[in-house]
Image (cartoon, rainbow, N blue to C red; front, side, top):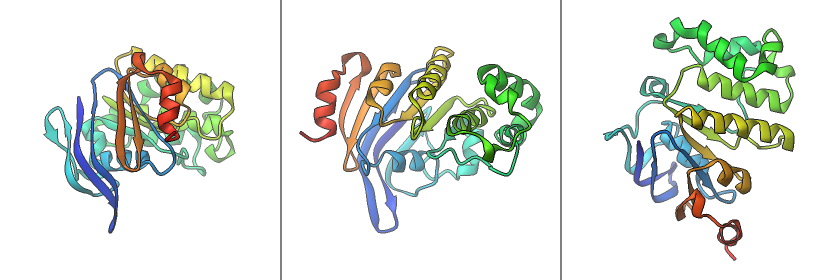
Length: 233
């Protein structure tokens, strides 16, 4: 389990998160939704060590990992699919995937994890020798997700996977998330497509202004009420 406890974080003198507390249960998919500027991405960056933590704690199995350097997160079993894909455009699809297993502990498993990635994303197998910069947006998102899975993370952090993608591709990606959850992967998902996010989630958090304003089991969420809070009606 990952526990975020009274977390404050931001950028320089600008604080974004205000005493945020959440729990990400093992083997479950937790989704975090909210309008632009709510602090969702800042929360994920703080979790990954990309943003300094001003106060509070981030505990992984009881150990505070707040402030752990980003490059150590793979060793802790955490991998991130960043907003905007952030793939290596001048490298091939397969080279991008191999980069996901760059940490020394994962290098011996590259061959088997490539096979697993290509089974999960057959389109990437077809384009394995193609430069990543020539892919469609949906294919690039698949590369970003498969690259994160190359480290076989215990916890997969996914930031806005549906951003700018066609509905048919979004449905395919959420099908993959549902499959990963069924396999027992712990997933933290930030997403603005509320219906898709709630549909695949076990627990839902709604953020506004750097604070948590709703914490509810996904089965108890009523979208109409959620949207009223989302838009601060």
